[in-house]
Length: 567
Ligand SMILES: [Zn+2]
Image: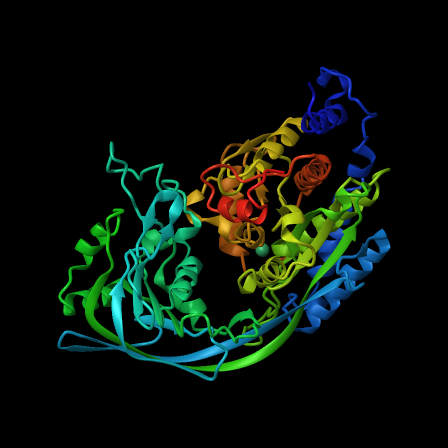
C-alpha cells in the first residue's frame, strides 16, 4: 500500500524522471512542481545578492542604516510576491531587542599558599551576560567538574548531585573524550558520537548548564586540539563588544561570570591547589568521575558598558491550502545580517557579506517565489524567516525559537540556508551534522530525483551543526535541516572543492573582500535551492511530522513537547 509519504516522493520522482519512476499510479493527479522550480534562476539570485551586498547596505549590521535598508528590501520583496505578513500582528517583522555589552575584567585566584593574578586577555577572558553595570564574584570556592556535562542518554552526569551554587566551576572543553574499549587510540562511537562533536562539547552548553546549576562563575579550560581553534580566537572575540537578547530578568539567571583560561594557567592553578591536571583530566573521561573541590578561591570583577539595539527578523507567510494543516508550519531561515562596517580599518571598511549571507538570503527569496508559483499552495503553511544577528551568536533565530509566533509543537520543521554554492554544479550535497532526523531521509529521496547523493559532513568534529540558525530550532526540539554545498563538482577534479573552500576561508571569510566575484557560477546554487524547495514541499504535504532519530540530543525535548504521542 502506498503511504502518503511515498506518494509525495513519487510525485517528485515523476517530476524529474518521468512517470516510469513510479511503480504505482498516483492516487491524485501529480502536482507539477517544475514550472515553479524553474522560476529559481542565477540572474535573480545574483540580482538580490548585488543589492544586499552593495556598499550602500553597509555590511548589514544590526541596528544600523544597513538594517533599515535590508528590512525594507525584504518586506518589499514579500509584498511583490504576494506573501502575507509573517507576524500575526499584521506586520512582516518580529522585533528583536538586543543588548551590546563591553566588559572590563579583573581576576585573581588564591590556591593553597599562592595568589595568582591573571592578565586579561592573555591568561584568561571573562564576560558577564548579566545586564548590570558591575558583576563581582568574591572568594568563591572552586570546583573541577570534568566536562561539566549532564547527558541522560549516555547515563552521564559530571555533577553527581554536588551543589555548586555560588561556586566557581572549572571545566574541560569539548565532549568527554571516551576511548573505544577495543581500541583506546580511537574515540568510542557509542559515546558522544565518537569523533563528531555533540552539543555537550560546545562552550555555549557549558555556560548554560552552569546557569542551571546556579554556579557563580564558570571557567572553561582552553585546549587547542579539543576546542578546534587556538586561544587567540577566543581572546580576540571575547575582548570585543558582545551581544545578547534583552531579557526581563536582565540575565540574572546566568552565572555572574563566564570565562576561559589558558591551559598553562589552569595547570598552575591545579598544581598550587595540590592536584594533578593530567590525572584529573584522565579521571574525567569515565562515567564514575566525581567533582573535585580545589583548594582554591576565585575573585572576579567585571564592569559592563551596555547599549540597547533594536533589531528585527523579517518574516513572510504562504498560507497552506488545507483548512486544518494550514495551522502547521515549515519555517525556512536565512540570516540577513553580516558584520557591518569597521571604521578602524584602513581601506575597505565594509563587510559586504556577499556570500555570507546575502547569497543565502537571495536564494531563500527565490525559494519563496517558487512556492508562490505553485498552482495550489502546499497543505501546510510556509514561513520565510530572515533572521537577524546570526553573526552575534544566532540571536535572531534564538529569539524566534524562544518567542515563536506560532506554536513550536505545530512547527513541523526548520530548513536553513547560510551561503550558497558559488562554484558550479555538484553530483552531491553535504548534510551538516549527522543523520539525526527523518529530514535526512527526505533529503536523500529528493536528492535522488536530481540524480544526486548525500555525503556526510567532512568536518563533523568542528560541530558546524551547532553554528548556524537552524540549531536554535533544534535546541528547542524542532527537527532542523542544514545542508552545505556538495564536494563532487561536475567537470572538475577531486581537489577542486577543497581548494576553492580553503581559498574562500583564507581570503574572504568574514573579511571586507567577501564580495560578488566575476567567476561565480550559480548553476549549483539553483539546484540546491530547488532541492530545498522540494524538501519543504514534501514535508508540507506529508501526513507524518519529521522526527528526531534515536540517540539525537534533541529528541527528548520534542517528545515532551508533543506530549509523548507520535503524530
Ligand atoms: Zn553565515
